[in-house]
Length: 338
Image 1: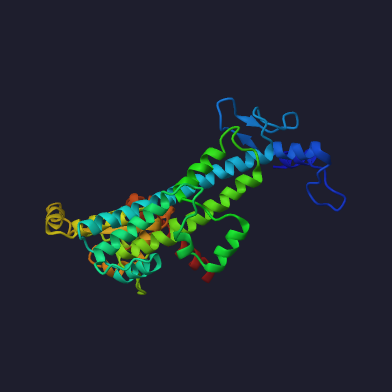
Image 2 (image 1 turned 90 degrees about the horizontal axis):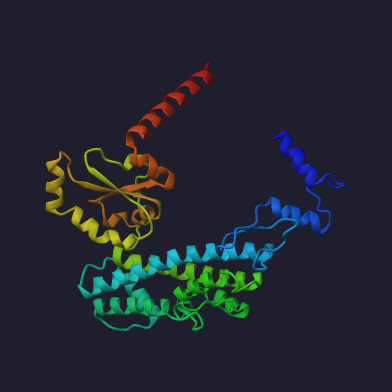
């Protein structure tokens, strides 16, 4: 550590006020860029690393362009995941309406229909039209403004977004444009690429988060305030526990119904279990925890986050860990008393 600190001070001498580091002109600023690890690996001619002797990559991109390209690619990738979720949720709602399956959140369906201007009386026709409205908006080109954002988002925010010129177009097309724009030699303007990041942020928030939750309410049931168990204690050793994780909430609707069927119970009992239980983790677990009142027979509760998932998949190690932790706390408490 001492050698590393000394090496850093050779690169960045202390300023007169003692602050660290103190850039001394353009060369030292480039040295900071180099040590920060700015690198572009977007084409097969690279990777290109920014150094004092090489301030630009082989395509001419400088540090600002490289950083922004990498950032836009990451934002587009994350946005694509959430737009994929709302698309699947809308498709699930449409299929459920077509087969006249169960819609657990009719109040939420009425709320969405009212926002979208859908006036049909039949709930299944209404649900299918809501799903079609979502899909149609998602599939618009990026140069056509998304309509549903103005019906869902907070009005003063929409006004400000329009003033700033960051109202997004079709959500899937915005992801496509972001991926294309950050590729080699297609854009080198950091401000323009950051503007695309803002558009992607808006479409992800409104569609991938807000609208997904509203559609989930229709399919999975509206959230209810209640006391609910959390943590590893939700695992019931008398049942076959299936841990669910990820973001695709509505794909578990059919699974939940199947696991409480007599056929599933018989199969579980044949191997010595009472039946099946779903144990929630990460976002899916949280989402079902909100709606747990609708699934008391199958859903046992939310076990935790990504880190808890590993413990759930290795129960013997988890139990040993918690036993050791309990012993440690007892010994610590005893030593404090003494």
